[in-house]
Length: 359
Ligand SMILES: [Zn+2]
Ligand SMILES: [Zn+2]
Image (cartoon, rainbow, N blue to C red; front, top):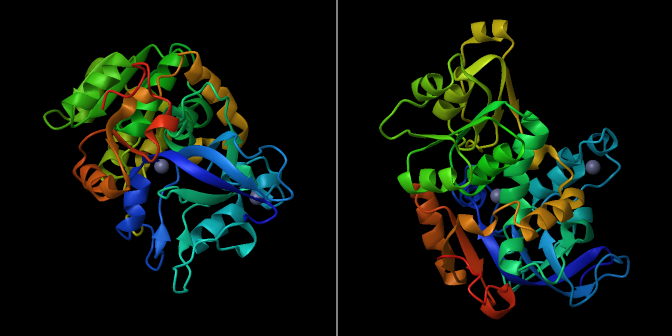
């Protein structure tokens, strides 16, 4: 049984994200395993603890991977995505209060990943991580909300605060970057330049509203952007997590512009940028988990997806089972495909009637 403030969920589908690969590859610190990965997913509640009243067994839920404590300095300042308690728990691989619900059959603990660990048939999550869903919203799409959509949309809306008529460049058009392209378009950006090294991803970016594309495998991204928008863009959203692309994001800004770094660079990696550029009031800022209270905002994002304003399912390039996760990781390492979706229950995933993913 789950603890008093926990929810036991039967996982139906989960998105496979580059952050899972980063952890597996040791880029987010050593000693973080054994662990059950997976931080974006959806499923059906099987049991709830005594203090949980917002969901009941049978309810559909999507996962939110930061469960804000509400009392730490970050939470009190209205920055729940930066909750210090949730962060400490995440690094320690435990649930709130230090709880561990994952163990080897013969004894020995297994770490939790961001309180979700949904690459599994069942998972126990903190109450605040279980976001209720309308039954009519397909679980395979709900599985993609908790990281890709929150992060991509939040970077544009909350971190960059894109306004009508602005120019935006998105560097890296994977599962998160494509959501950022859509969000920039929804926010009224006049120009949305998509940069990637993969022609297929650039085609998807165009279908989501990118006005220009730059294939970085053959063209210099900064020169390309400056050719499209003389003087540089207002906002550059970096969704790769590499020093070179972070430098490019900063270099392609117009004076007063802001580069938002969403991509996760491996621990220990530094980025050098020309300090003189600060004279032109350029900003380089990070963005974690969409700079939002995800659990609070996910229902609104879900309703936008449900009525077609936000294309969630279009990022899915591969459907896999639990035995396909390692191949999905390899695709992410090679930069191939967009989002691989782990599906554990095809019937419950809700993609019948021709409304399923293309993969
Ligand atoms: Zn993720
Ligand atoms: Zn907190």
